[in-house]
Image (cartoon, rainbow, N blue to C red; front, side):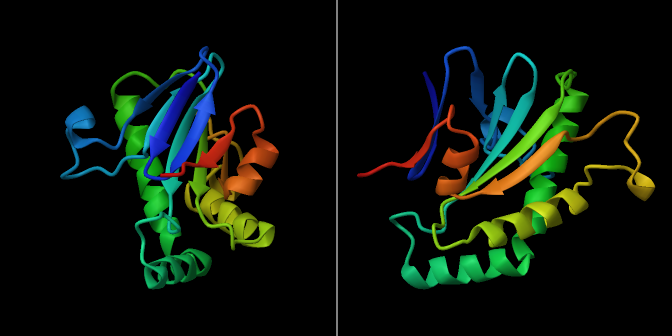
Length: 169
C-alpha cells in the first residue's frame, strides 16, 4: 500500500499506484512563481492531483478553524485551489508528463461541512478551472476530466478503495 500524508490527514492507495509529493519547493523548484498541489498520484489510466486542506488539524486553534471554514464556504479558497491546479498542470505539461486524463481531488478535513457545502464548492471549482471550453463545448485537448471537493466522510463514500482517515497522535 502507498499512503500519502499531510499533517493529520492520510489516504491509502494500492501498490499499483505511484504517488509523489509535489508541493515541496526542493522538488519542483519554482515556488517563487508557481503554486503546487500536495500530491500527484499516477494510476495506469489517469493522473490525480490531490490537495489536502485541514482546518481541523490538531495543531490549529479553534478560531482559525472557524475562520477557514467561513472562507471556504464563501468561495474565497476556490481561487487558491484553481491556481494550484493550473500551475501544477502547466508544470507537468511543460515537463512532458501529461499523457493521460487528469482528475483533481480536494480533501478538506472539516466534518462540519455538509454534502451541499461540498457540492457548491465542487461546482464553483469546475467553473473556475474550467472543465469545458467556451460555450460549454469540450476542449480539443482536455485540461481536466473531473474534480471533486470532499471531506473525509464524502471521500470514503465515493472513493472507498482509497480510504482517507485522520491520523491520531
